[in-house]
Amino acid sequence: MPEKLGYDYIIIGSGFGGSVSAHRLTEKGYSVLVIEKGKEWKSEDFPKSNWKLRKWLWLPGFRFFGFFKMTFLRHVGILMARDQNAKDAHFAEVA
Image (cartoon, rainbow, N blue to C red; front, side):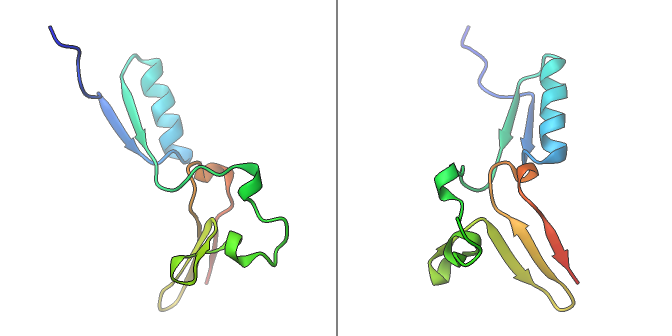
C-alpha cells in the first residue's frame, strides 16, 4: 500500500495559539502541518540601529524589507510583525 500523503491537521500560523495547538496534537499522535507566512530571520538581518528603517519596516514599494508591516485604517494604525515566529517579535497597536 502507498504511504499516507496528507495530514490530520493543518495549522496556519506558529504564533501563540498555533504552536501550542500543534504541540498538543502531535503529543496525541496526530500528524500536523504548520504553515507560516514570512521569512526566517538570521541575527545579521536585524537592524543594528533604530535609524535603519529599511531593516525595520516592510514597505516593498520603497524597497524596505524589514519585519514590521504598517497598516493604517480610518481610526487605527497597526504595527504588525512579519516573521516565521511571531511570538518572538513585538506587536503594537496604536489607536
